[in-house]
Length: 83
Image (cartoon, rainbow, N blue to C red; front, top):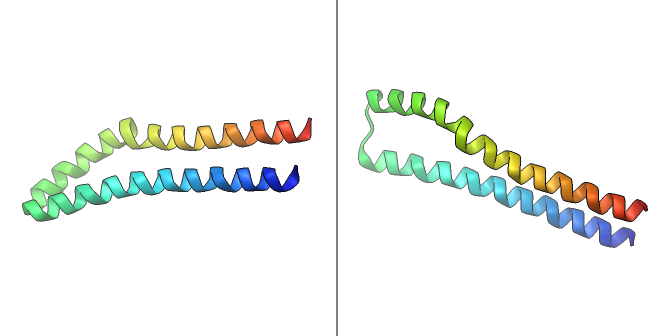
């Protein structure tokens, strides 16, 4: 059962990594869109203020869900393995 546990935990790690990269890709796409639309210093400052207030509402919860699910599943699988 040891090798199965390791394989499952590696799969969970890869899923968490994929979720993180997905969130990163979303932000990268926003940046490309802003660059294509033409960017002024005023626009950058306005977006910076908006990002500071909105990132706590969107990015942080997404990361908490990704890692919360991964850690919970890892602990459940580990408990199943131990008992």
